[in-house]
Length: 329
Image (cartoon, rainbow, N blue to C red; front, side, top):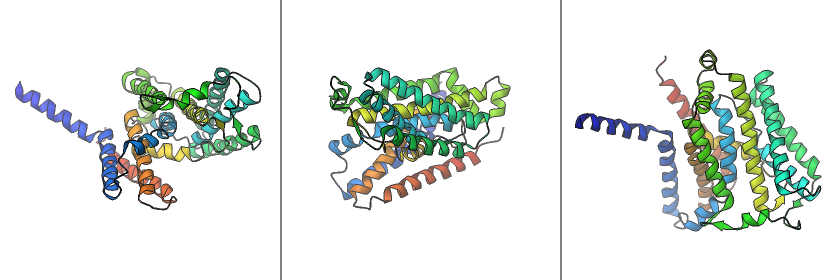
């Protein structure tokens, strides 16, 4: 009995060491330690508190993008959708005088329609996912400026608009959007890991033909993934708009690539069928820590894009290597 217990403990330890979360956490620690050797002020509460006021927006977008990635597709329109949702909310509140809950509901619904459009193009029309979502990226990106007419819309000047005040406060030392992010990640973790729907989603990405034979409506699952991707992107954009108190047309620019980088680095397979919300959160954190390290080490800010590309390339190569070692069924 003791020998069996030891074997179970050993196999459990091996699974933990081979998990995506640990494989991402190790390079995260290495970056932190190396940067701290050169800059002692890097590993401080003040610096990491500042980072974690920015991470939630991208992390929420990445969480939504992961649904599509888990089905074996990609959505590169998420950044513009995030900005579009923030603009819709701002226009309805400032120009139309709507209440915040009603404006947020319409902004979220608008984003879901965009996700439905993406899903229709990819799933039912057979348009390549990269082409379809890039088209949406440009259309929605242009629509932001059309709605706002090139101006900034300030929510802080609205009489009786108190929702932005909640984002100025700290709760247990962290901003409100940080705790909203954590709640969303916990919910998605439970859905993906503990529910039948989550298993079906992963099955669609792992092998669509087998999933169809198992009675799963693969097309519906893929469509739902695109809607969820847009929905979570909208949440990220709305939260940033409420945090800064201004509707900015450039909100969300470049978010899609940071979100996808965080997903891939966090262990979401580009071929689908694999992903962990915890790994995504660590992956996005790694991307931000690497970008922050560049600033602290005095490197040019243009290196940020190069670092994102290097992290994504490394994660993709690792995923390809891992897929090649799978034993064929």
